[in-house]
Image (tube, rainbow, N blue to C red; front, side, top):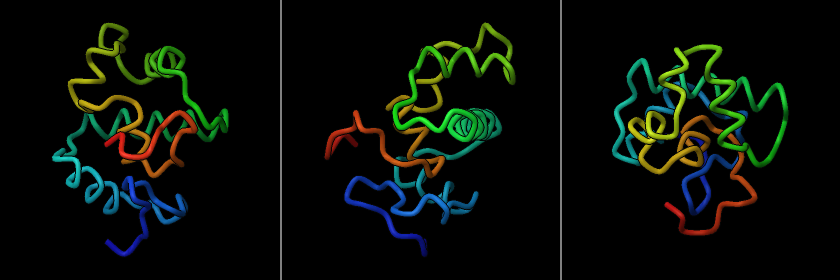
Length: 107
């Protein structure tokens, strides 16, 4: 991977993000990205661009997820099925800046 990451594995410059870098970031977390992962990642990237928030509230994001997935899938349980460490893990793989709520060593 050519992009630089911090000690927790987040991209230092989220403008460096590419799908290939996402694949590597996911691999570092023992995740193989499939279609469902990409849907969640893209929705989170869209959410971030639309609202430009440093902390993404899970409930609000899950509500946004209903625009791209059937509502029965828009639960924390479903999210954790694909990203065992939750929304912070999605953010990292999506190349978004580390949440101000993340602490060093969370992953």
